[in-house]
Length: 90
Image (tube, rainbow, N blue to C red; front, side):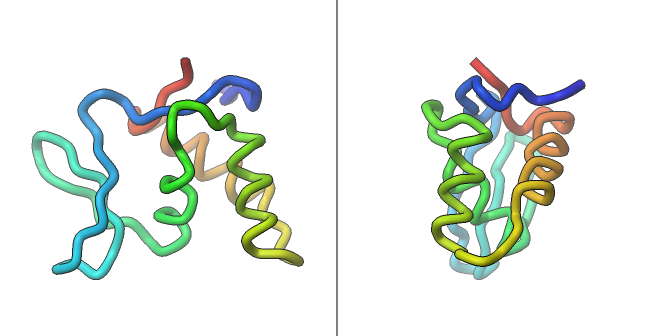
């Protein structure tokens, strides 16, 4: 399944992104536990707000990290997060 680049992304109802001081990392909380995220995954998921599309998120990251070719990596990660059910389109 391909994630549409033109539809806003949001977290699925059971997931919540939160900075966890004890983990010194962003984590994705869900009823059964948590997922400790890598620094890059945290950077990507922080931009999911229910209004930004995948294209918006990629543009935001490319502006924050000029010179880095992030499009494919970010697209792949968003696809992975979508396939895992962490994020949904609406």
